[in-house]
Image (cartoon, rainbow, N blue to C red; front, side):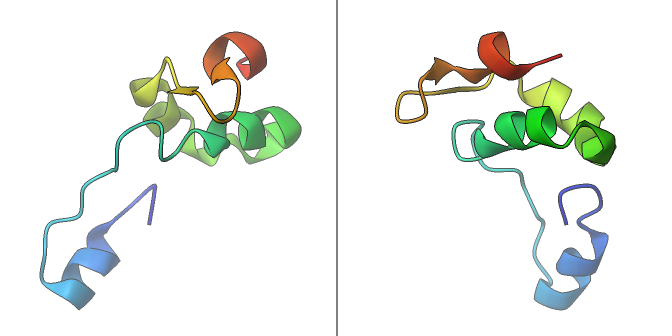
Amino acid sequence: GFKDAEEFQQQTKAKQELPDSHILSWLEIYAFLFPTEKDFGQQLRSLRPVKDKWLGGNLTDTFAR
């Protein structure tokens, strides 16, 4: 759904929107830990810099490659 929300839009009959970047901040850490699974790279780049005070502040500075 992150890469292509079309199926979700068809199922719910509602426009799908990405949440604020702090909600998706875990993706920065995931991309760091699993670099071969960066299929969502363009979407993640559009959210940067990713910040979340509960995960340590600016995660892009810490984890982005």
